[in-house]
Amino acid sequence: MGYMGLSHWVESDGAADFRSELQDCPLDKKSIRALIMKELKNGGNCYNTSGPVNVALVMEDEGKEWGNEGDTTPIFSKLLSKKEFVAILKGLDGQIADCDNKSEWVGDDDNRLWHKGNFKRMKAAVTKTAKKNGC
Image (tube, rainbow, N blue to C red; front, side, top):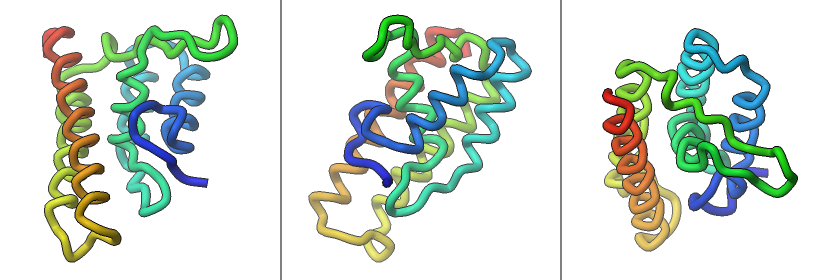
C-alpha cells in the first residue's frame, strides 16, 4: 500500500515490515547490524519509504509498547556501531538532498518541504541516539 505519513512507523508499510523483522531477529550485535545494513539497501520508491527512513522511524519508537500488550519495539540501537549510524545518517542525508532537487519531485512545494522536514526530524533523532550510545 505504501505510506500515509512519516510521524510514526505505523504510517509506513515499509517501516512496519522492518519492525516486524526486527522483532523476529535475535537481539545480538551481529544479527542486528546485518539486518540494519540489509534494510539500508532498500531504496523505496514514491509509494514506499526507503530503508533509512524505515530504520529511523522504528528507532524513534524503541522500547515503546504498541497496541497489544507485549508488542514492544525492541531496543536495538545500543547494538549498533558507528558504522551503522553513519550509514543511516548518510541515507537520510540522501533523502534530504533529494528534496532539494525540485526536478525529481512529483507534487507541489508544500509536499516536498513536508518530506524534507520529516527527514530532518528523523536525522536529528538518529543523531541524538548515536550520541547517547557513544557513537
